[in-house]
Amino acid sequence: MRLEGKIAVITGGAMGNGLGITKVFLQNGADVIILDYADTLQDTIKELKKEYPKVTGYQVDIRQKEQVNQIAKDIQKNKGHIDILVNNAGVAKLSTFLEMSDEIRDYHFDINIKGTWNVTKAFLPLMLENHYGRIINLSSVTGPMVADPGEVAYATTKAALVGFTKALAREVVEHQITVNAIMPGYIMTPMVEKIAKETDEENPENVIKGIASGIPMNRLGTIEELGYLALFLASDESSYITGQGFVIDGGSTLPETKSVGV
Image (tube, rainbow, N blue to C red; front, top):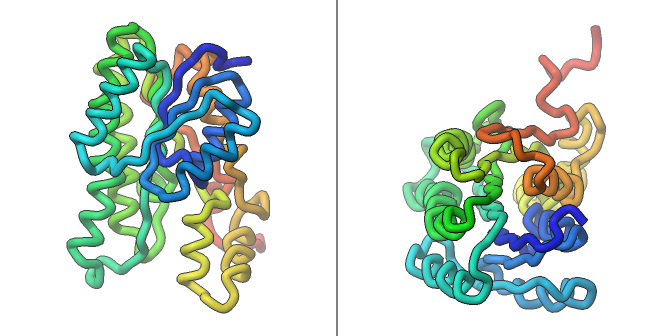
């Protein structure tokens, strides 16, 4: 088992991409600690424990630095160190630039950027003390590569995470700590389902089908597929890779145009 004996902290691990990563890590022997704001956290942990006893969690708002720091201290006391940190927690609310309120802008910045900053700053010392670590940041193809109307705040934060990944990777490389980013396209998550419903409340499935029609593989990815990419980046097999972004999008960023003709 590729992560046997490893301790992983995953933010936003109770649902969506984070749940996919959590399940794959548990299947591969890791002890997983979920940090999540969702009220469904304990239900998720209870369900996972039926098969994987090595999963625990904390309900936390990663915007609250002191909360995060206290959890890091608690984990250090109980576990001594961590080996893997997955900064998965993130939000997306669509609105055109001129219509977006400062509150919604800050909501994106506070969770997607500052939240990732808070968690990484709290847990990095536990890796430095152990002279080993794998940090994986969930960016997106949105921002670094592509964008659609209404995504300015989201795209800005996800592009920022690529810069964060590269700069941090350079700082910690001599401590045997790697830092990489995953850049998903459309993965079938509750966030995508919510966007589909907001776009067409009566027929959200039509929105999903429309998204799939623009992907060369003609489907959205699964959370487990994303989890397996995270597994590689969390494993010792990825030891010579750092500061990179890995696209997983079914080929959605390949076409030059939407046309299918020649």
